[in-house]
Amino acid sequence: MTDGWGPPKSPPKSPPKSSPASAWPLNDRGPGPLLPGTADRAARRAEERAREREQRAQDRLAATDQRAEARAAQRDALSQDRERAREARRVEEAQRIRARLDAPPANDEEALKIAKRRRSGARARSGEETKTERDTRGYTTIVDPARIRTLAARGASIAALAAAFGITAEEVEAALRDTPEE
Image 1 (cartoon, rainbow, N blue to C red):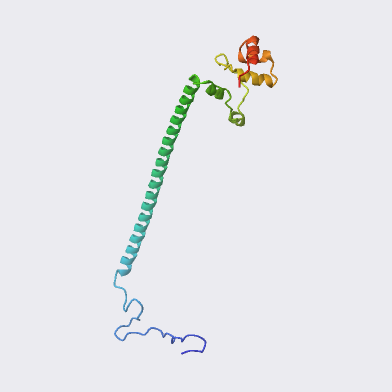
Image 2 (cartoon, rainbow, N blue to C red):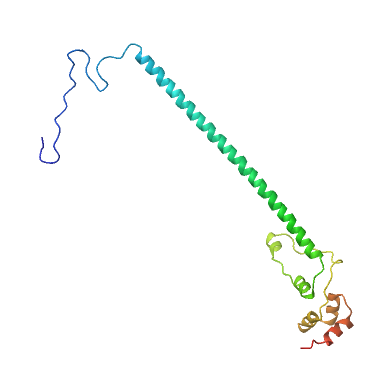
């Protein structure tokens, strides 16, 4: 049957008919009433399934919590290991720097590099007080005649050069008189 506007339509369904052998109507589950006690068993089984479902959900939550705690403990242990390794590297680096600074320079060029070393400015950026009085009694100044001449050419006085290098004014004048032969 079609009305001309689409696929054929199926005939309308009639209400379920009664079976001549039984007084009960036919339905999708089959003919007949439930057996005695079936409803109680079905209800108990439904409750049991609900309890089992709830228990499984609780077990899953407990397992998830346990995994999360284990991961957190593992991450904490790894971060502590990394921090210990970092601290060991810091100590080792400090010892290396101390050993390098305590060792006498191998040559004048290396000594000049140490003397000209620039600071990064990290202390100034940190807000820490940068102008501090330092005990300079143990400091050694490298007396380099070329450096004395360079500073004198920039306008430093003989007295200032003598005080800066810890030498006499005569030694400064001698360094200025001695010009390198090129």
